[in-house]
Amino acid sequence: MDAPLIDPFQRAISYLRVSVTDRCDFRCVYCMSENMQFLPKKELLTLEELDRMCSTFVGLGVRKLRITGGEPLVRRDIMTFFHRMGRHLDTGAMDELTLTTNGSQLHRFADDLYAAGVRRVNISLDTLDEAKFARVTRWGRLPQVLKGIDAAQRAGLRVKINTVALKGFNEDELFDLVSWCADRDMDLTFIEVMPMGDLGNEDRVGQYWSLKDLRSQLADRYTLTDTPRRSGGPARYARIEETGQDIGFITPLTHNFCESCNRVRLTCTGELYMCLGQEDMADLRAPLRQSTDNRVLEEAIRAAISLKPKGHDFDYSRQEVAGQMSRHMSHTGG
Ligand code: SAM
Ligand code: SF4
Image (tube, rainbow, N blue to C red; front, side):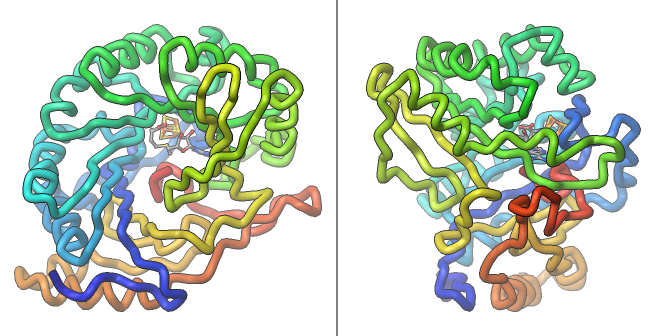
């Protein structure tokens, strides 16, 4: 292998998140507007190009690949791509191939994902109430997602539920969500809502439910013990002693987690974002298309990593959104 990717702050880049499409079959209120304009298909990297891009990163030391979007499972033929990436697990070049999904298509693909080498899947779900689910996702239907979760577990995939903490929306379901996940042996992570995209009339500060507050509500009922478990990412974990569950907290706004950041994000058009919370990006599509020799691409990747910033600028502390990103989460991949 070539020299690994080390950024200017001595962080080794071993984790690549790849958005394979900006499209989605849902329109979650904090993520997309109802009438989203999607990219023309010709802007997207083809599945072959995505393969070449990801494989080049693997050659440079990336050991974990998370496929995301938009909704990754709505991209046509995406299973071909998962199977192609599975070869890096077979050779031992990669440790993990995984995805983040809204679960709507899992009933169709769970077995195939397992066959491709996927063992864990993150499924986003903010409420167990059918009407509220339809409200927050606009186009999503809860029974279909529950069917997907069943299929994933039957296929042998370990499921983690990701829940965006939304003030006045799912505060009253905190304990239901925790015990539902405990009963089904699923991990659960809460995410603070982040200021992504211009979604018109959504009130981002109003939606913001601090995980500090969420955690103290949990602590009123349960005994919480911090665990040293780290994902190299923004999540911190606490164990609920009564249920034995680990609960994750992703708190980009109340804590800065950048010092241990090991990841970069590739969009479906081949832009590499070095930080979710900064606008800096490098275009990798041009060097990819410029030559069939991967050295051009490798040089562009190294140059990009040498610009990875120290941290992000999100800040709600003055009761206003600072550091707001103009792009949507579905663009960079959540
Ligand atoms: N469609 C897939 C899904 O929903 O899991 C993958 C992409 S989605 C952009 C990834 C994650 O980003 C989801 O868990 C979603 O809840 C989260 N997300 C989207 N917009 C967000 C925001 N403004 N703040 C915090 N999390 C957000
Ligand atoms: Fe789609 Fe995921 Fe964004 Fe919801 S959060 S609109 S499911 S990409």
